[in-house]
Image (tube, rainbow, N blue to C red; front, side):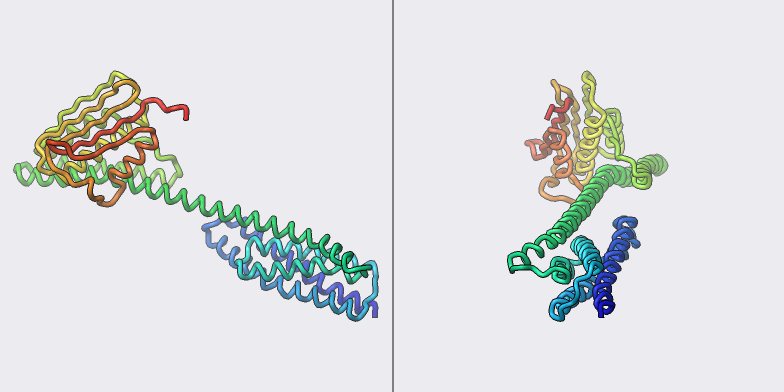
Length: 367
């Protein structure tokens, strides 16, 4: 008879240990396969099925405990050791379920496993009072609560990590979209302008050469972006004040409007500030070409009064760019970039046309 009772005690303990071992194996598979890979997704799906294994294991443990008390099973040292191993395994299983399983599966499985782990003691111990029984169950239940708390904390960390990765990817996508829009739109617009000018002026060979040069710049922008993506390199600044003068000269050569340029080089301009200034000028010239094609005069001023870099771009055409937005980041995206550097960007109508003005600090504030 004692042998049968030992078998009855060993069976749920073996099942609980096996379930905990399977859970640890699945957790290791999930950790070894990073999020985003197919192997990681399969491991996470298998870990979700762990709740279905915990339910029968916990149910078997509770059934043996009830049967033991109802039939008056013997108190032997081996039963106590098996019970402690069973409770520890159910504690581990509950923690793993809370961390990995879907909420609808995790809640009932963790509750049942916690109840089984906390109430196994009556197999080897007869409490003198109800208060003593509650205290004994609370002692063993504290371990289950600790395991579930650890699992919930790790689950929260996983959620935060996924959100951080998703936010980082979103920021990167928006930045790449803004870069491609701001630079490629200018080069492609220049190609179109040269092609139209060649058709009107009757000099197709010269127009083709300029179209080729603009296309090469567009390809260089694409190559630079793809190189950054393939090799996981940071997207460094692109453009400087020399590029501002070159962009103005190309704009003048591609259309009927001449760009009057005045660049003050008295103060040293940081590379990132110069790159942002170049980007502002490129966006402004692109908007003039797209939204004020009849402009006959464009004035560009880049000065450094004090500790700021001032960019002013005006034209005598009309533009509705402030009231609409056509893809990419446009002026709203540039305004956000300028604000990040502690500057400001203002675009709006003036009595004789349109104006785009920006102020960029040359020195970063202590904050």
